[in-house]
Length: 505
Image (cartoon, rainbow, N blue to C red):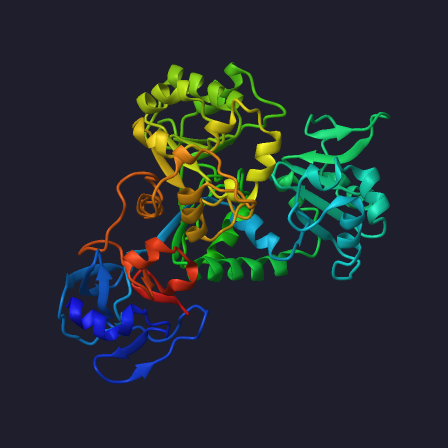
């Protein structure tokens, strides 16, 4: 088998052509490049000569399941896909992203520090954005670009068009006066989430206002639905077959629109116990968003966590913790109440080692985003307390302490490419090349394994290509060993969901 593999890839170079497909041994078919695959369904799939852990085998599927894995399988009416020695993996899972925000970002202006510098540069970017008298949405802003923004600064930069600028943390929106006037009906003037100027008027800085603003943003629904489908194709194209959507407090319309990303499997953290869910959506732990500018007290958080679900038991929680203070508070409450299966820490941006024992005893999973070290690391080096730098987005030491860790992107605030997540977990270097926490590096293989764990069990046992397993698959153009050496989404040739080809390059 190994010799046959070498003949197929002369000189050890992998084939870069699309997967060859045929039904039985006859008619050949070509899938649309870079698009979802549609058309008549065969009895199943037969993927031939795929690399499974260094061995070439064939894999047969029926319906949504794998039914046979062995070399030399004969076609029995299935759609036959020539693997040509490429690795076959379970479909990847992104354990924390935001589908609606990712869709919105596709039609937004990036004003992050790597794109814009200084107030004049920000003014040029805003004023030269595609013209129109509708909303302009800008994302990725950080104070290192041009300082703190409020309505008065934004009015000078772009007075004639409603403008909303999102901080790269995702926690803060900054609106100009024209935008504030249009969303006046959404403003709870007694809320601490609305900052005010010296005269007591809203200054355009709104904290955690995504859901409350949405119903007042006229004219975005149709383009948003198109963008959700584009996001689906983008994720499928990188080998992803399932995601955990971490959007907090999804309303009925937002949940309904998640059907647009099918066939992707979606575990939603921000849905209530009584909302009806689309067929491709499941209910995950309940998202709790701790706002570091306004942390709840102990009793308030305890009451939030200790809520009984529809089944009469406490529903697991996924608690947003990006600071030392929010994590200490969360761990204290969970230690008092007792953890339940599925409880997880989102981000764990700063985890002091003295909490390791509590995290392990409580059985908490940390869902982390190592790519922030690449995209934001130089800012961290300049701004994060020197005592906290060694504890930024820990991974290897958490594993050594017996704490489960799973990788994720936090897209659109991070890069949605799962292979970039793997590279960043391996390298832990900033854009300038500086290392952050080199002792926290992990190899590509264990990083990939966390993206192969079930949506409902991040950081658990990775799914495998085996009889009885779901036929959610990622076919690569290179071997497993080659992909680990140079992880990249360009090597993804086909993505299969529920036994059906969903995307092909």
